[in-house]
Length: 194
Image (cartoon, rainbow, N blue to C red; front, side, top):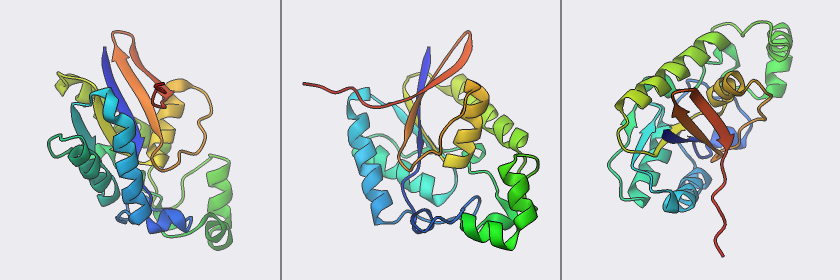
C-alpha cells in the first residue's frame, strides 16, 4: 500500500478576504506560514519521507516550510496539482461573483457550467488523478505529503468518494491510500497520545 497525506496550503490574504484565487499566484500570509509550521508538527510522528507540491507559490511555500521543519529534501513540484482555474471569478468574493456575473454564478452553484475561462470539473479531476497515478509510480518510500488546493482537492475527493465533501479549510489533511483496488481517502487528524 502507498500512503499520501493530501493537504491544502496555508492561508493567503485572498483566503482571509474570501477571494477566489484559482491560478492567480498569491503567497502565504503570516497566518498561512504559521499553519504550515503547525501542519509540520501534526505530521511529525507520521514519518513523512517526501513532499510534493503544486507549482503555485502558496502550495510551494507551505511544502517548503514543512519539508524544512521535518528535515526533508526540498519539495518536488507537479504542475497538475495546481488549483482549478476559476476564470472570470478569480479575484472576486462570492458576493462579487453573484453581483458581477449573476448568470454564471447561478450556473456555477447549480453545477451546470463553469464560468468563462474556467477549467471544467472533469478536466480538473482527470488532472489530479494523473498526478496521483504518477506519484504512485515514482514513490518507493511512503508516506509522502502532497500540498495542493481546496477547490481541486474537493472535486477530486468528491469523484473518488462519491459523497459530498465540505469546503476544505487551509491546512486540512486527507489520508489517501493506494493499493491494487485503487485510491481511498479519509479526513485525517493526528492520533492523540497520552
